[in-house]
Image 1 (cartoon, one colour):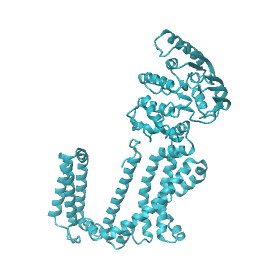
Image 2: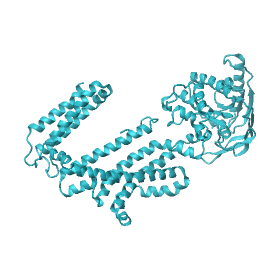
Image 3: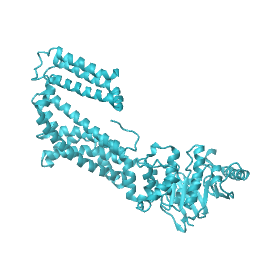
Image 4: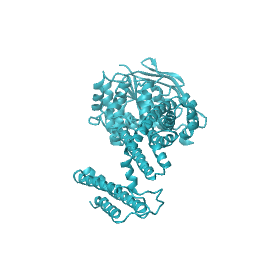
Length: 313
Length: 259
């Protein structure tokens, strides 16, 4: 019970510091105290969570576990508030006050929404192409000795090259920069998925194939009902790596001449010296990446129910 | 009755990591009558498993023939069920689907749906159909593996120390279960074992094999009525006879623990 109060105490400390200490005069003022609004929102959300946890046992246990962490995060944000807004200990151009950072979400929400859609589309197309090709290449390498002999060295040669360093070549070969961006994202996804699929297949214990053979399974059954499901944990690890590297590539690929997208947004705001917007963009990217990876792990938990937790998120 | 295995002049060599040729099976001749329960027993590493795998078609013999009901075997097939030393259940399938795997692979699941439920009952796993292998004990997994091997009504069940990894009590229960399955399915059983008690308790005939290269040393008919009593004098006589034979077989100078 005491632990569950901790976030409230942290919120009271941070809110009173925010309200009682005047903002530094060096710091350009925001039009509204958005950080204070965020704190109020957090307080409201936590209060709802707290009340629900009184009724639901499972939520209670989870909250008991997480409460000190939440309190720590709130105090950390409070410390950032002190360092930037209140005492302006760091150059104000590069470290804007939190009111302005959170204000961007209000003033720029339409543009941010467009950027999310544009990046989402690019990510979806690139990921779809890269993942399906990667899975197929991985299966080929894993199951066929010939494919392993010819394709595997090529994969190991191309794979470690950062996808974005293909840009000079890709830009001259493909007709639009958008295609180039899709290509680079697809390449970033293709390598980890190919590698993890093929190594997953190659590491399947031979005894499973022997069991299948003694049960009268033909070649395709052995590939798709034994090899593929047995390799799934490894494939998922590949999907996880691919997601991370697709984000890195996405942000860089959009610098090449896209007219919307999260990477483009960051670059444009940096060019305008609007660091509050840059931070808001970073928070947005981190949030989206976290949501996507959480979804992937939920999916993994559903598909790999048979596996005793190996990778966790 | 079907399920006759005829092993004719079977020879098999391996090349070990040092590049030496090692004869695993040397001129093995054996006829196993349809519907009988036969145990292969011999010193560890002598090649019993090699012989069993050759019958299954997993590692074909170098020369000689192995025939099932007069037809030579060369590749694995559903007419010969195989129970491995480890249960080797597919961890991504629940028990029901593990047992149904062979039926589905051969496209006969629709006709044989009742078969899976019947086998689950027989091996005492009712209520665990939806469980995954990692949720079950070793003995339960081994029972599921036996049910899986039997789901397609094989003519022959090849069992490679299926009870080797189990504790003594589970083992004795499972021996009775295996006898029940054997009677119910009218099949031939060839079982590799290290355990002389187990061999005498279960088998119609015990095949004693010599140390490497494996040859058939002696075939002993166990003329005891079932159910057998492990404590009776004649049971002990058979036990002693096999142990003496094994001791003699183990005294060849090329046994690995003499090196």
